[in-house]
Length: 612
Image (cartoon, rainbow, N blue to C red; front, side):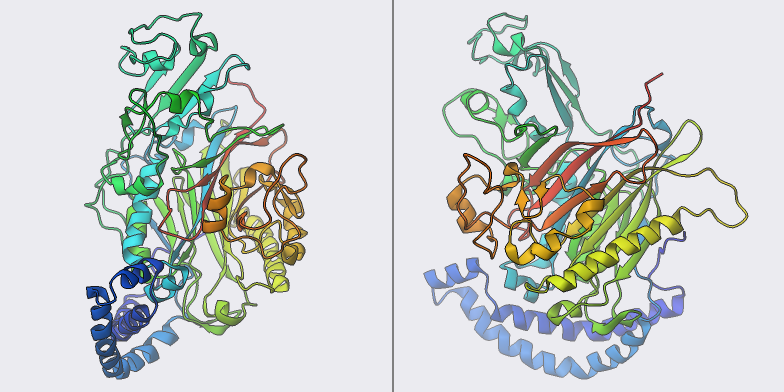
């Protein structure tokens, strides 16, 4: 169970790797810029159409020949660097583990719960998965994205700003009035900690109350009233913010450097401006402004519009389309973090919130089962607020076409989430993966899913074995979660083979009713025109999400393909332990920075014991 904290085992190999990359990089950068100048994004095309003689067009005409000449001049040095670099990849470690030094042992990061505080009744954990499309800039442009390094920094800022918000829970005693529970109060900025047993509007601002309660009118009234539907329903709002990290400026191992904004800092308001839910109307009321703070917007926005967080039918958990990453996020799985410079920038941002990160995952060159040469690594990254005990990466051996150029595979991790009162470790297992992307290759993806289950079982068995000669108590398993981009959906007939895979018998999909049928709320955009314009629809026209639901009419095109998954298994847990989903959300905070929707899930682990 040794985690790799450096890419190579010796200083000499480090030097040779740095030397070879310094020779290769000029050619790599020039080639990337040359190709990028030939592939325009939709925004650049629009600007050129408005002004054919624009400065951007002139820059392209001048820079492209210059890039080509410099590229040809750098080829000899690049060839020499490649000859040195390629053999080194055979001894390179499959991942890089970095962690931030904490002042106190057992601290789980900003707002975290100490490892020794595992409560008898259990605990909840929040997971998130996102495909961030951090390819080299020339390749990212084929997905209508550009400026990969800038996007990497912004992705990290948005994730940590969203995750460091306060977690707000709203409880309603009366089942007849749930209007306030639908409001997305989770969009508030950090810094609030308050219990409001009375009307939340009258208790939210330092006990003075707002002046625009829809029942009490303009007067400032803080006592309960039988006429107010909020008072009558017995609403209680609990707002909790992560504790500030006193060691925010501590140095970190690996490539992380201090000196940037802290995790609790909401100064980077670009983190949310494009994806904030905005309300429109007259004066008065309370809402969320573009800088994540309370502002005045029409009160009808809260009381008359249906909220985004809701439960559908007999569903036992909340689900929503959220403008922010969930508060108190514990585990983050990312895919398509391919670009080396972007990996460093993104890791630096995430380390302001997540103490433990696995990055630079996968192999380059020729190695092991990956027979073809790998120009890109796996693109996987895993960040955690809890200590990582063990990790393993496995490369899929059956990649085809352009997918074979990347070392796609599965990253397995074992995390330490607490200690029981019998001094047993409580652990969880995480699997982050990215499957084959080419349409029509269902058999390839099914083979990869078979390997995923096999490797996962082997990892859990090997990581649970104690070191030779040592007698330790058996670990208690709290959860086993699979996160990632599986590159197939649950509604297309072309993906029927994957939909019926054994993965879905061992793991549960919260959005799925069965093979070929998603739950009605799994539709990620309610506006029909928006779906047609912004979402890729399933290639099959014979089936779509929840199309068989009575009384629900959904157009065949433009529903969106749900290819990013979060699966969990309750097999292998301790006796009487139970997993329950508290919340599932589609997150839009990375809108404009990637071509995927992030998904998040909060999972409650109950032990069946009572609090002493």
